[in-house]
Amino acid sequence: MAQAKIQAKMNEAGKVSKFSRTLSMADRSGRLLDSLDQLEMRVEALREAATAMEQEKESLLEMIQSIKNSQEMRNISDGEREELTITADRLLGRTLTVEVSVETIRNSLQEEALRKATSIIDEIVAKVLDDLDAAKKRLMALHAACVTDAPPVPIDQKFQSIVISCALEDQKKIKRRLETLIRNMDNSEKTIRLMDQQKADDLKSANGK
Image 1 (cartoon, rainbow, N blue to C red):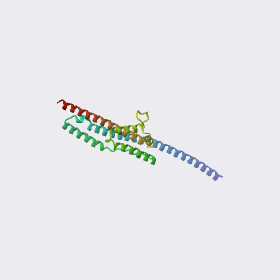
Image 2 (cartoon, rainbow, N blue to C red):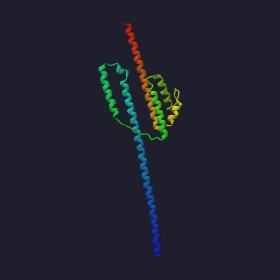
Image 3 (cartoon, one colour):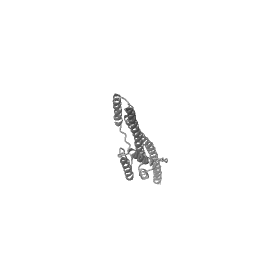
Image 4 (tube, rainbow, N blue to C red):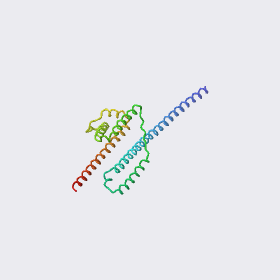
């Protein structure tokens, strides 16, 4: 009888101990989950910061190159131009020493979509010197496929379907690249117009003499 009571007490103690241990494991699991949730937010913040740095690098390179190729650089003395070009090249070199890379996780379909989108853009860029206006129009049609607002130019429907199949981060990068290319073409057109105008003015002055 006494033995039975002792056994019953041990069984009850075992149940309590097991129940307490289960609660403790659940508590630990909850704390670990909270920690991982906080770390996930920090990881996303890190990726966003790195992406912002990537964009800043692209912007700096574009602005420095724009200054190097600007009409203002042609309207100064050779000595000043040489000095400013050296400074611009130094800034380009220092900017290029900054390496920031945010890898995008893609499945096989997204990889293929990115390859196709990149190939289409590269093909247009390769023909820019042949026909600047035609290349710009095509790039604007591609860019129109990447925006949600109704654009004032025709949309390349085929390119749009390809971009939609890309990873979200790749979609943003494609849009940024197209915007950069279009801006560079706008600057090139301005430079060409200014040079044509300058030639015309020089010709008038020569005829006037």
